[in-house]
Image 1: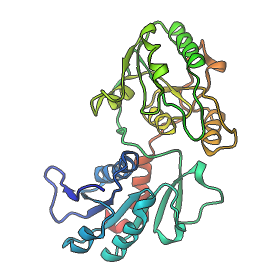
Image 2 (image 1 turned 120 degrees about the horizontal axis):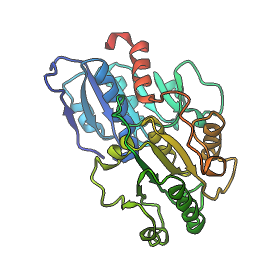
Image 3 (image 1 turned 135 degrees about the horizontal axis):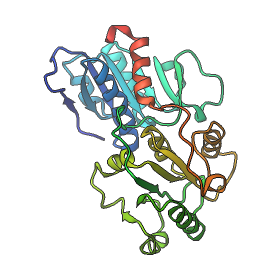
Length: 303
């Protein structure tokens, strides 16, 4: 559970509308919630309050929130209680475990929708992220993002290393960085000293390193199990390739989402494009800013 705190914009009006963020302490969930809040803040002079799932701070609050936002199953009850307490709209990110009709607006990844969405559901292409709307010019750099075994994928170090070696050989003009994740097996890390790249262990990277690397890289390769990283790479306006991982099922929601991105031309696997330039994304992708505009369109009194 996160500490309760209010974040003021520089020079913000203390009477400006307040966004109440219900957070559960999970970094991935909190980043999605903050991504939407920050993009709303870029469009209108909102203040932001971050509170956990405990009802204590909510019931004692002397301020009135204008909108409540939450991501993750543990936030749902507190989110609904906050909306009732402040008599304001509720926005949930990701597919909730309770019926969507309880929320005023739901942003749900399209791969999690099993049926046509209701009027209060907006499908998103992947998860929201905090990559900024404006990107600096790309550098002659490449980035490799490696995940690990998961519920949907296995992991084989040698085939992955072979693909990475070929990518590096086919693109000698780029300076390469590679980072891993907490799921990456140690056996894979032991081989990285043989590659012509800079390895940045995720456990040692400064908080802003990955965002800077995403924005700088002209080309990014991501293991297909790392869904959030795939969408962050696309949002950073890079050309994105997929590193195949052993699938436990071709029918899992992750596999179906990856295959859909390939069909739509957002990315590809190396067997199709190993020695040629990766395709440019078919459009600019920035779901957090699109969702922020959707919020203000649905609830114009907020603006």
